Image (tube, rainbow, N blue to C red; front, side):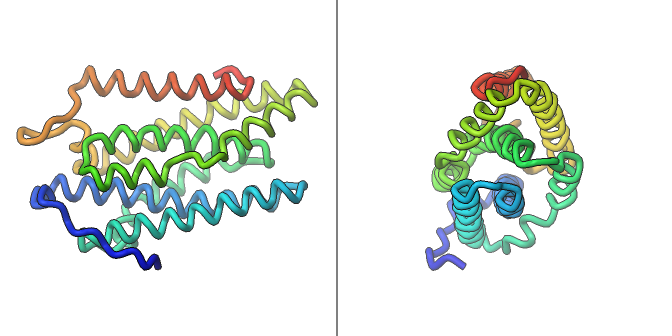
Length: 233
């Protein structure tokens, strides 16, 4: 566990629903870091090149560090990270069960497309939380160079065999479809998390038009990522 001291609970946390929404957001991110660690370790086992193994192991280790930072922050709310993560096990595990990669390229694309789509959504939600939590969310979801690694690997694979592009494009569409379904399932089951986006009488949030624009942004960003890879979205 990190030696960083737990942050004091901010004054706005006397709003119970708001506080629970923030804990939910952090719980999702913590469990996402744990599962990312597991999948990066699995990708490393599929990598034939030693330098690729080192890169993936380094990225996996960063996910552990991210988890510890989120654990410490959640502790500042008087909540154990295990309790904060528990509501999201089923949705995450179902997503990963439905999107199990067959090879290293599919694993890398899953990290680049699926994880990045989720991270974009969490950053949107983080616009409505306190400054310390928002800063933490942005820091632990920062790319740290993994995107460049994935783009290079995928583009090299397509150059070596153009048939790879079609297979990976289909895989990318499946990933974003499952990611959207997962987000909808989580939102439907966690009212406090949803209220961070929609707001309440006392707190501003997004109206339906703004939420629609948000999802448009998410899909457009996904399309740009696919284009960067040399794939059709």
